[in-house]
Image (cartoon, rainbow over all chains, first blue to last red; front, side, top):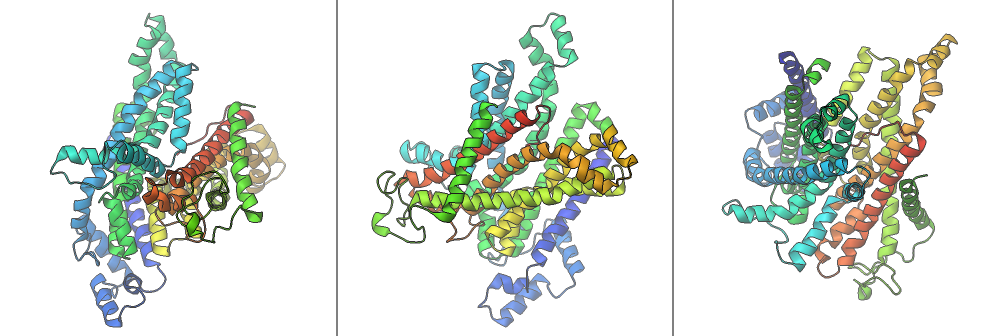
Length: 314
Length: 271
């Protein structure tokens, strides 16, 4: 397990280094001067020079990269040009919308997908299975921002159960959760569909295994064997998918936040894009990539701990 | 032929047909604004109604189909065109440093949240259909590279490949003449799946304003424009969404159907 963890740590570090270089490079290769790009065509030369100095653009490339990464390691993401606020503060304010939204959606999709996938697998070929598989085909094909608009139309505009957008803050937790409910449902739908399909096929794979025949031969009913033996083994691929889905949820949250006018990281990134505040864009993207790589690392470790076979294979 | 294959093929033909037809004819010119006739409900002279500028929605859906299909198709082309040779190369040099470098590179691209990087690319280089294609295409490369390598590896152990080597063919020629035809089915099926994911990604990027720019019509943009009108004219928001849904559904069913029809043993990676 120690060797496995060390191996994963090395690839984690390599991924983070390459990711930071790529993000830094993409921003660096902007044609022309980043300071001039940020300030637009009407900027005065002395303003550009001031921003160049502030961004450290007169320093060599390597030094700038080192300063950027070194700062982030210490929690210093630089200073936003448009907000005149440390980027870390901006992120800290917004993350309390985006992160709970992603977790809420993950919980919803798991809650729906597990029973649906298990039910479909246990009734393979039956009407229930066909209905659930048909529903997942639709779930995978629906663009979630469009589904969000339909949810607003039905539940906010017609039924008036929820507000159509905005976020009241966490002072009133109930109101905050209510405001995040429609966005979380919209975000969860495609992931729930994928997860239910994986759960079903993973369970069906298990049903053909020798240990299942042994369990049945020991006198367990089909359902008992399914719950006690198949389900536990079927969870490994499901866990992997849940880990992968986290990155989709974070990215999806960026778009869903636009539909519901939620003041999360997605809004921050778009405001920064339109204001050409590259320092904010660069740091938020790096943070999102970091989170995704970390989540996948944790998932890797978790299922290696659960299943010794995976450790041996790696 | 399965029911999936038939429904999927019909939907795909319908939308590609609409896109192709839009080059020759659309019911109305979408660049002409007709404010007196804005937000008409479906029926009458405008089969699917009009939007807030009085533009014919059917014509815009047809033009949008063109954008979506073009972006997704070229993005799949990039993924296949670069990913397949990389996968074939890695398989031909299996176990070597080159194989390792190619596969680790793939893992790295997989680790990035694709939409976030697409946002970064379009934010820096400016929103356009071409940048959307590049952003979506990059993330197709590792999908095809991995799949190609995985499918090609067992083939290299087969007798007919040994025979080809004995007859003096090099790795590149064997890959092109013997490996490729044997994995073509798999590529076609995965291509359909990536195509449908590309349509969704294009719609998402243009919805947030980072895809095709006006006056180019795109389904994502139509939805973004319709967002504030959803309470007064729901059809303006519903129709482009159904267009995306049906196209993606059609491609997914087509992919599933093709897989079962061509070879029931092959498995497709869904990301």
